[in-house]
Amino acid sequence: MRKLSMALLAGVALVGCGVEQSENEEIISNLVEAGFPANDIMVVDNAVYVGRDAHVTLEASREMLQPGKESAEQYRTTNLMSGITKICVVPTSQFNSYSRLSAGLDLAIENYNSQGLSFTMVRGSASDCSATISAKTTTGTGGSAGFPKGGKPYGTINIGTGLQSYSDDVNEHVITHELGHCIGFRHSDYYDRSISCGGSAANEGASNVGAIHIPGTPTTASRGGSIMNSCFSSSETGEWTSSDRTALAYLY
Image 1: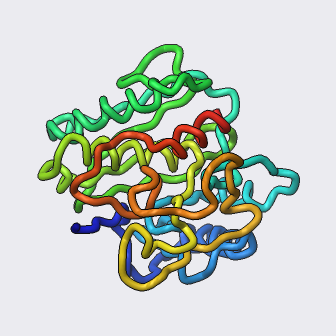
Image 2: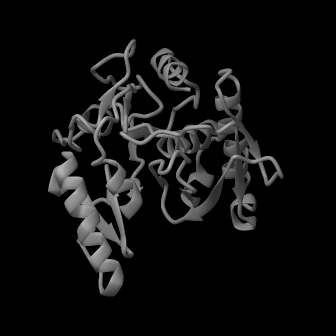
């Protein structure tokens, strides 16, 4: 079975300059202090990523160092949403032009709304949005997003236009996954990406602030065991697993 990485960024060297480079140096320093291994941190187009598909801003990296942030996830970041009741997911016109990306977005939103959570998601703008996430396109067959900050979800998901060649269910899976990062999920197999990706073992880095286990969910990952696994296959259904549902219910 072919394994596809959620990441678009693997193997890219660190780059940066000017003001962005100064901020990025602090972000990287904060991430290392928070427990992320240096070889899991990369800079692409003046943006810092961990776990290969999760963008970290300066504010988010500083929040990771704040004391007293204890609670729980299947595996989650330190930062979570707070007080959010309605998230508007707004696709660009280019995103809408890809029929399977567009269908996958609708299915992903339905995934979240089907769970009776403390928030709902809607497609498009509305006057009563607590937060907005932009759905944009990028190259490749993966996606990228980031972690919450200031109690709000990360504001952008980037979805590869190469997913137009895959089923609606695969698009649903990838978009649900990236929205999961936006609300605070880490990869379920962050400690060994080879579980879902194959190849040699690769640890994204565990720490008491960056990869917190959610009570009631497995502490170990399995292939096909979670939408939040690092890599996906071409036969994904796009549906939550039982441990995904447990994690969502515990957090939100």
